[in-house]
Length: 125
Image 1 (spheres, rainbow, N blue to C red):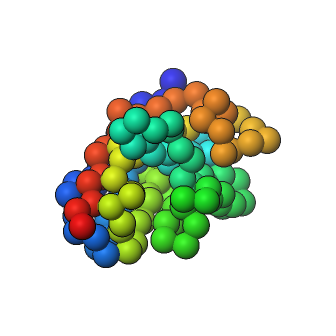
Image 2 (cartoon, rainbow, N blue to C red):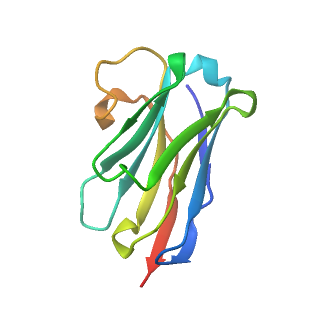
Image 3 (cartoon, rainbow, N blue to C red):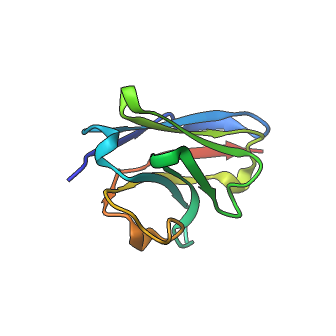
């Protein structure tokens, strides 16, 4: 089991930027892919982005396209989510997730086996 720890959340004004980090307790090569999801109050968990280490392929959900960039650093066992031009609608708890083997669908939360505790992002207007 992989332990995941998110950081980098906080309160930011609309139009600002944040970079979220997710540190894995094991070598990232032990995880096949890592992803970011978010959940706003009263809403379902939503896919934002994922990174498949093999080949470096990235996947983005509709909410993640354009303003979100996922990246990773194998040496630091860490995956990042850069969020630019933040909007109040981006307010949510952002969760990091990992899976240790190939999946045909990285957009679904059900594909992931390990989850972090989440980091709160609040965007003020």
